[in-house]
Each structure stands twice: as C-alpha cells, then as structure tokens.
Amino acid sequence: MARKMTSIRQNQELIRLPDFGNIGVWLRVLLGVNLGALLVALAANNALSQLPSEFAMLAATVEPPLIASLVLLYALRRRLENLGVRLAVSLVLAIALATSAAGYLLLAPLQALSAAPAGILRAMFWAALAALLLLRYFSARARLQSPALAEARLLALTARIRPHFLFNALNAVLAVIRSEPRRAETAIEELADLFRVLMRDNRDLVPLSEEIELARKYLNLERLRLGERLQVRWDMESCPPDAVVPPLMLQPLLENAVYHGIEPAEQPAEINIRFARRGEQLLIELSNPAFAGSGDHPGNRMALANIRERLALFFDLEATLETETGDGRYLVRMTMPYRSGDRL
Amino acid sequence: MNAAPLAVLIVDDEAPARARLRDLLADIGAELPCVVVAEAQDGLAALEVLQQHSADVALVDIRMPRLDGIGLAQQLAARPGGPAVIFVTAYDQYAVRAFELSAIDYLLKPVRAQRLLEALRKLPQGSADAAALRRLAPEGRHHLTSSERGRVLLVAVADILYLKAELKYVTVRARDRDYLVEESLTALEQEFGERFVRVHRSCLVARDAIAGCERESGPDGETRWVILLKGAAERLAVSRRQWPHLKALLRQE
Image 1 (cartoon, rainbow over the protein chains, first blue to last red):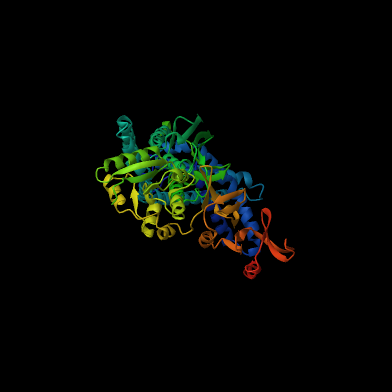
Image 2: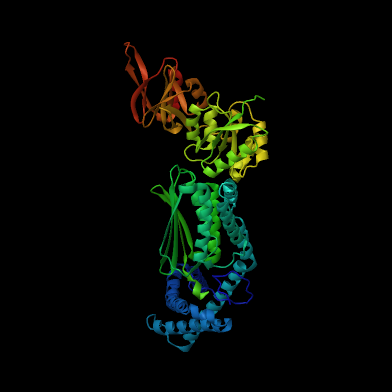
C-alpha cells in the first residue's frame, strides 16, 4: 500500500490510518477529543458556573492518556504502515485502551476517584469510542481529499503552470539557429525534456536530484537569451542526496525569479538557491534581486498560490511557503517534511 | 513610397532577439528595403542612440531594464520627430490584453517575417499615437528625461519638487539635484496637471512638496507670498495672479 502522504492515489478501504507524524493529524485528534470531553461535561452539567471546573477535571483525566497514545503512535508510525489495516486498527485501539486504563489507575488516587473496575471500564469505553470515531473521521477526510477530487485538483494545478518561457525560448532558439545550429539543437532537446516532465503524470514525489536536473535545463534555456545577465549560485552543501519532493516546485519558482529578478536588472544579477535538511524538515530557499512592485505581480501571486496548494495536497499542514523582501532581495522559503527516496 | 530604405532602430534587451529581428529585416529586404541604423539594449539606450541617429521606425520590446518599451514610447510621443513605434512582445497575457484594449498593434515573439513586413508597410505616421498610449498606460509617464553630455538621464516624476521655466529649458528640481529638460512648461502643466500647481508664470510646484506659505518683503520692497517646500530650503515666490487660487488650494488641505 502506498503511503498516503507520498502518493495521492485511489484507495477504497473503509478505514485508513492517518499519518501520525503529521502535525495536522495531532491537532485534529487533540481538538476532537477535547470537544468530546466538553460535550460530556455539558451533558453532566447542572450549574453553568461549575462547567469550567468540571471540564478542567475531565480534561486532566483525558489529556495524559491521550498524549501518551499519540506519542506511542508517533513512535510506531512506520511499523503501523507495514501492518495490514485490520491489525493496525486493532493496535491503535489497544493503545487507546491501555493508555486510558493506565492513566485511570495512576490518576485516580490524585483525583480521589475510586479505583473500582467500573471506573476503569468506563474510561476504556470512552477511549475506544473516541479512537474509533477519529479513525472513521480521518478515513472519510482522506477519501474526500485524496482520491478523485484531490487528483483532479492536482492535475489542474500542474497544467496551469504558464508556458511563458516557451515563447521566449523558441524566439531565442530561432535567433541562434542560423549562426549556431549546434546550440539550437541542444536547446530544442532541453525544451523537449522540459515539456516531457511538464506533461507527465505528476502525482508522486520525485527525487530532488531530478528536480534539480530539470531546473538546470530550464536555466540553460534562459541563459541562451539572457547570456551573462543570468547568474545562479547553488548552495547544496547540506542538501540530503536522497530526498524526494513534490514535482515541479523548483522550475516555476525559478521562472518567477528570472522574470522579476533578472529581466528587469540592468547589470548581471544572481539567483541563489539553497537546500538544507533541518532535522525532519527539508528547507528550500530561493532568492532574487527585488525591484519595485515585482512581488505582487498577478503572475507571481498565481504561481505562489499554485505551489502552496500543491504543497498542501501533498503534506497538509506540514509544508510551508513564505516570502519576504529585505536587503533588496526577494526570498521564497519552502519547508516540507524530509522524505527519503529509499523508503518509498 | 520614397526610395530611401526604411531606417529601423531595434530595441531589445536580449541579444538573440535583436539578432533575430536583424535577420528577418534582411529576409524581407527584397520586398521592403530596410537598414538597421542602430540597436539599443533598453529604452534609455534607445533615447541616447536617437540623439545621433534618426530612424523611421523603432521595433521595441516591452520588458526591458531601466526604461521599458511603453516608457520609451511615451518619451518619444512627448517630443516631435521621433520614430514610429512597433511593439514586440513575448506572450504575456497581461501585456497582450492591454494592447488589445488600447487598439495598439504589436508583434508577438517569435516574430514571423510576413507579419513584420505587414506591420512595417502600414506604419503609422510620426511617433506613437498619443491617445492610444494613454489608453495603454493611463497613469502616463513616470519619468522626464534630461540630456547631459550625450547621456540621457531619467528623472522620476515622483521625485520632482518643482519645475522652473528658464530661457530655453525647464529646470527640474528633483530631490537629489537639478536637471535641464527640453520641454515646455505649458505642455508639462497639461500633462501633469494633477500633480503640479502653478504658483507663478514660470513655476510649477508639486502639490505634495508644499510645506506651507509665508509673507515676506520682496526685493522691490513690496510684500509678497512665498511657498515653503518639504525637503528643500528654497522659497518660491507666488505671483499676485496665482495667489487666490493657491490660497484656496492650501485651505482645502
């Protein structure tokens, strides 16, 4: 079974496990359980003024086992993915039951609750119910987001990348075709490679090295018309060699950088690209000289919105894309979970 | 049609794009004799080239550093005797829409010989059509130009504090220094009437630059009103004729 976050493919099971390494999943679990606790507190409530303290009592019982389960699930997430769905769901339930029982036994003396079997069973019942409801919720959400719908959105987004540079590149090729036929040949070959990638099925994560190769081909084409005006500095020192990333993120950003940072510059100007691994995060930074008004050009905003949406489809809340302007440069910073190609 | 070949100026920041246009002009030479009088890598360089050469037509790229194609066309429209302008642009949906809306003809890159020939044959007379340019760029010129020893300098209109008519020129006082501009104060007042206000027969002041006014005694012993500026120490005399109008304006603000 392909992992949910690395591939957006059809998957028909009734229950699917969410990625317990995803902050978005944690947030939703915490919110969901606490909302449930609030409802329970409301149902048992007699005087509204007592509600906050009653809820606090309940939360104090619920939170420790909940967080313990999440930590356990986070630690076991790779192993869970390799189990069958039934087994994995059973394991999740077992963890919920065990932590709630342990939590009750440990916390009961502090809260002056009876350690009677009935109390423990009640805690375990609520925990199992919450776990099942949440698993159902995540499955429904995954089905809503991931299969047909997300796929269509992703394909539409990829297709929308503007081929603005196609016409410029063709013009440059036409210009050198008489004087430097060899160079024109190479350029057309690179153009073909680029479009092969643009038009392929871009649903899966691809090796970062492939993205970089594509970016170099694109920059070669731009160099044909811009010559020395286009300078690029690659900082790959702390770049993980095995990383995989969503396809076609780099090229549109470079296209923006050329359009807004190189073309308006009177002197040769430099684009800086930096890759780094920060723990479990992959960081990609791209900067170019900033000129008045270039940041909020409609074309630029559209390209950024497009990339942001595709990042969200691949990584939910765990990927970010920020821009900033300072020191005369415009910077785009992308972070996403670091995924190694070896584990695919 | 006259027998002399058409004098063409090519303005594009990309060397291959210029080479391509030169090749195409040579290709259509049998049907329409052309001579490339010069090439320039942006609008400002084109203005400099035009101080020495005269051209019948300029093939002008839109996106260029320093002064872009539309800026160049605006400068050419503001002076007599400039070349006609044909815009050349790579596909850019925003630019193309603007051209369509303002009914300005343009060539799309990659340019084809036949299309270039057609455009050169139905060349508009004189420099770019001012009305069409205003539709294309309603906000008007962003710069005035000033010539100094063969070089052309851009003066951002936003940086101008006041304009003063001298004998043959207009002196432009910008934030950093003075520039000489070869345009008439009347024409500038018409073009930038929103931005500048006349305080004297020979002086326009940027509304934004006015700090206040004061009464002082003039050199002839009579008292008069002067304008104080933000960012400059000069005091600009207000003529009797302009004072009532200016007083009303200052009161509004």
